[in-house]
Length: 383
Image (cartoon, rainbow, N blue to C red; front, side):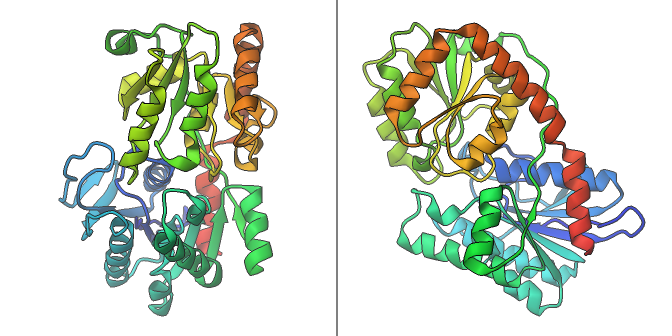
């Protein structure tokens, strides 16, 4: 995604951002971050242009809007995309970079590792570049050897060529220092305060009541380990349901395997991709939110669940545990037995879950503020 922005309150800068799929989308954390940064920077008087992918929408399968348009004051420009598995990010970031270079912004801001491969072209053109590493994407299980190698090229380009390098976790900060000798800037994601939304649509759609279900909400991809959650849940003696909300991402076979794994247990519900009011209701009314990931950057869904005051259960990887900061429950990464024990204890003590949920909400409202994220990002553009 490319965003043109302006980097200070006194000087209007034009900034290009590259790496997202759709401005305004909730397909993933990158899309949420870009949308929040862009619209807030526009409100501060900066000019921002986001370069969207063309082709079909990953979550809905619908054709993307291929018209240039202005949303929230942000210029949204679709770029040519080869709409095939493994080629969409590669092609869109290349054509977005070409378009941004032609337009001569003050800064091009790349998001995620793979889209950073053409970043050196912007450097050669004399344009300042900033890259945000949302996670070590080459580690994700959905990518084969060729795709992982390409993503690692983007990581190296960001580490060695970008003028500014942003990471979302302390562990990523250590990784870039150890592997590349590169100093990075730690700027975590932000989150908007959330208001409770009572049960309505989720009751009509899926028969869900407040507190009647555990919630997994995210992409159905191997590194997030929803199959581990299904395995752990199936042996729990509970009348609560397990809601698996989300769609696949280049992993249709894996999504099918999840449904096969859940067969025979009517308590497991797959909702598909959820947005809008049903999404807000799902967060607001779950007994607990569960994220069993092996690999994360800084999970926006975890921040959102905490902002809704939900008790959260995550694997003990630093990217999740650091966000919880003790205001939730962790289990041993990759262990269904450890996850099952954590869930069993939580189901047996609803008061403990409520206390943790309230603490989580207070923590994220104090710690993860979008205004601070925008201010620090703008400072990086101009240094």
